[in-house]
Length: 285
Length: 126
Image (tube, rainbow over all chains, first blue to last red; front, side, top):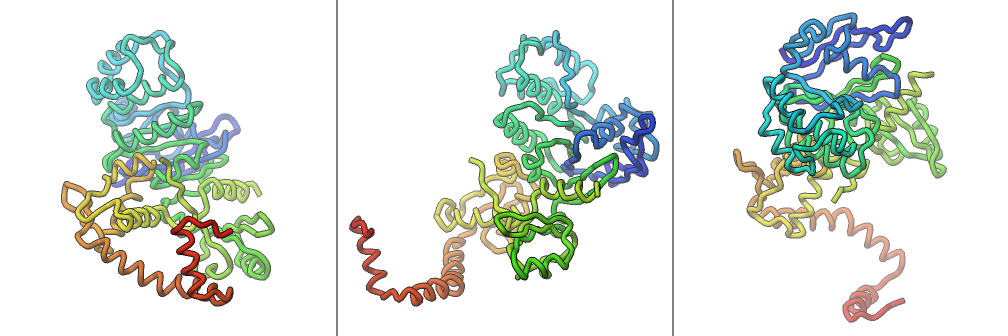
């Protein structure tokens, strides 16, 4: 088995709405995949299907299991943080550790306690006494103490300040990630994570607009800043997006080699955010 | 603490350039260890593969050496080799442009040296 997650023709309908519309993709071991899409694109529904929290049409296999029917086996090797806090407000940190230790075979209490010692969270604190950032720290400490093959993060840093967000990703790379582990992450703050991804997927209206490794992204997409005659010439090469800035044209090309564009102006690697906006506009045409 | 990456070059390439600059400045000496891939990845929030790719460039150029299980180390004579290459590059690529400017502006060698002397003695040349 090479793919950790394999989806073929996966759809999920809510009445007449297709939240996920016939998508196919693979996620391989050791990847950090960013799932990027506007609100209501179907990201969370797709994650739920991967986690077995909802059934779906089509073939979906996660770690070799059918997530919906074999959820129990799946959960032993998978962990996730949802975009909404789900820890009960009344629970004490020590009780929470007791609970996870009792239900999860791959949870290391020692590891969780080590991670918590790096924070200001006390084992006697109750969840309701913690700040939003601390609740996320608590959640993350538990998640990172679970020896899982797949970690799913749905907007993990929503509502957290910039210091905490940076620390979150640093910890993730330092204490958690290795080539045996795979991370699937969704966020709106693309610019914060684009450098740590190995792969990226854009989703809009339930469909995949782009599914690529970050390496081939910079080969496939080029941004050109140009003006005058060169701009006219470049325009003939059919950019997928174009806008004016300080009297210069900024064009985004897909599948046009750098050699063709060299000499027409300044070449740059487009940011994921710019690419995302261009692809969404293209899809909505 | 956060490095500013530019959009002209891939990050692994910029990382390579940064290490090269550190070797040239003498921040990293012969035999010194490079920071671990994991540390650099965590510190800059980069994918570890990106860091590894940058380091691999340095290995391919013979500037650093990978020691199994211990990390990456600056090779003996790396700075010397780099200086040689950098001097060559300066004379080939940059100097002709600077020379062209000097000639266009009609500057004499004495003007240039005068400028340097003034700077050394702290005279304001405004």
